[in-house]
Image (cartoon, rainbow, N blue to C red; front, side, top):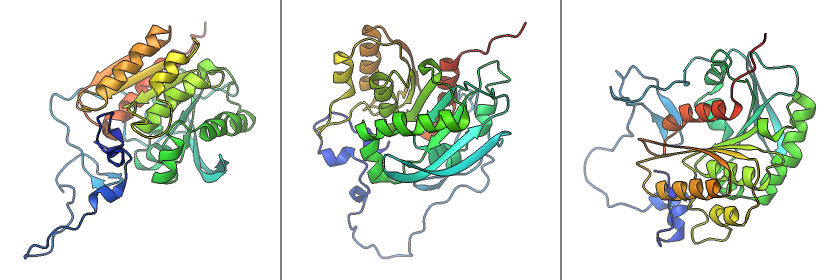
Length: 306
């Protein structure tokens, strides 16, 4: 589990911040041959994934639930990468236009931690499956987090980052890519801290983002640090029409209760909340299918032409 999933447990705050220095203590030297880094098993038929910790392989057991949406096939649409200055920081933004996308008033999905879904685990092929399954087809915009420090700052419910998404990114997309200005068709989605920020945006900027998809949301935030917890913001919020899709793994022992709490608080003030717990941990291989499933549930089915 990522260090950022640390919950409100009274442990030192640095244990929750994803600080890589936690693992750099010197170890006593042991005589013997030099240790080599692990490598994926060469006979695993499943593809190797490039993640932050290095190349990793998948292990899928016979009784594992089928992933309805995910595919390793490349997307059939057009993927464009551009440099966009968001909240004062130049960064990569990837825009994917899948087949079947309407010419105007396009639904839009903004994916946080965009490099994961544009480069590491390309999501385009899974997005392509929405149209043939009868769902509305969105334009997908993937926003790079740049680096760990900026990510922790921006995805910690940053007002400046929220203003950048609502006041800079979305207006550009409306002008350049003909996306809708209807909040009900404007989705923000993320995992871990990205899930926290997605829910925060749908709660506090519901005039822009009317839907949030959160996978393993880090609702422990801010721990013992500065900031207002999402739970407290929900308690103080006026009801809105925002809808929320929330998933968490049952093995994410520090996240299950905070996610249930957020679900209940949102439902108590009248929000549409679709909640699911899956047997798994804090892992993008679990999130990838749930992300598309959450988007599909928010967009609904395309109207049938008579």
